[in-house]
Length: 391
Image (cartoon, rainbow, N blue to C red; front, side):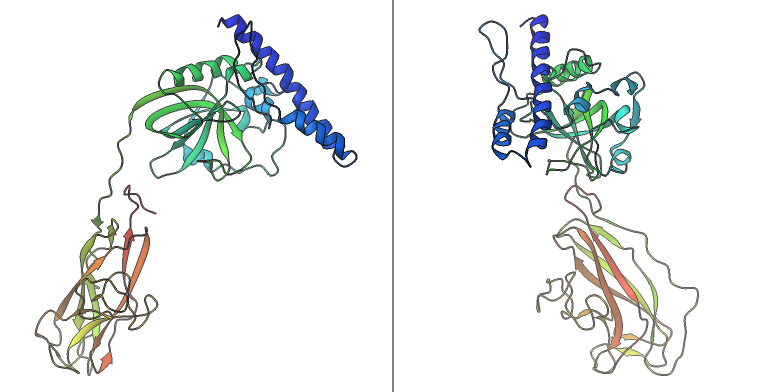
């Protein structure tokens, strides 16, 4: 079809779209007074634009209605857009903008009078019922937003955005084929388009503030983005305090450092170490009830003597990570730990399946005798998402 024919089709559709906007206004005014008349208008409004073209050929399409002049650059404020100075920004910056409440029918300054350029990953795309291409882009930590390429045939020939829309549509069609169902891309893209605030209605990939680039005026493609792989790691160890009590009468213990907190992929098993200084006057004797030292589960998570999701002996709902018991995290490593000596308690944790931050509170005790100091010792495990990002 020749360019002249396409422009004629565009002009025809714009006349029809304007008529539909006027019908929408009439419908709102009549709803309260003439329900039967309003119903008839409603049927007129939902009829799609189909088979408009020249000669015997036709192009089936349905164009949008909601804030359509803003989306296609046919509103009275379109001249305020600086098309020649796009602002380079990020998804994080755009999704942090305050959403207008309520969203007006006029163009929102300065966001909707600004052209933005964003480099991100095109995750999925589809052709929507209003003939727009719906593209979801994401940054490196999973923030998403929507960008849209309008159908040039739904844009008035007088719109200053038409040439950019035609450009973006051609660039996209040269690389991908949009259908009415979502397809996965995972392509690096740089998209340039006009800022736009949409209404939330359950859109795939919608930003928290419903910000979009709509319409896109340019899109360039990079290489396929390789999937991120989860990798476990352990942070730096925590050094002991400069001084601790010593020689206190009876059984006593003081925290004396530990290995670093862990960031683990789901299901990963890892070893942890916590050191305690025997700050009392009595030694800890392995295998002797009333004198042997353990680490026990404590408050507030999972609470005193309760099973933990991070480890256990496989009983009482705990995972099996070779703890002495479900509520005993570790036993003293040496046969005897005398006053003034340090015991390095070693234990194994297993990352739960669900991403998140998990806590294990521990406290030393003499089994069958008493709980000892220090209070407030915690072990933290961060379970990463499948792509290795922190939840």
